[in-house]
Image (cartoon, rainbow, N blue to C red; front, side):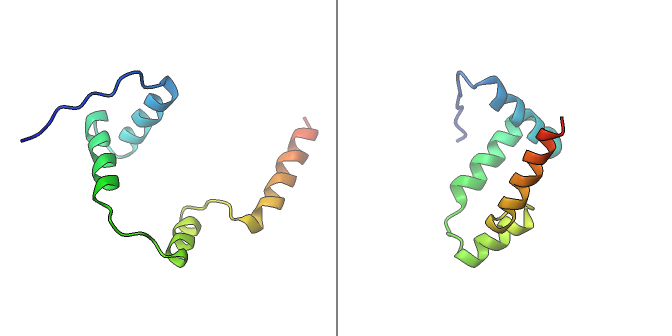
Length: 81
């Protein structure tokens, strides 16, 4: 039997990010929350270090090798303002 859950006092910035994520996935806020819970509760397997690195690269996140370049570009951009 399904259970009703309630999340109270959600900060505005988190609620907005959830709304954006729900819209991106063409879901209601309720549907997105259930998807997030399901994904995180049903995942039982840990990633190997190589799998994690692959996930990071696939997500286009900056890796440590790119950090110095990223910081320099941001610093230089700020100094030009």
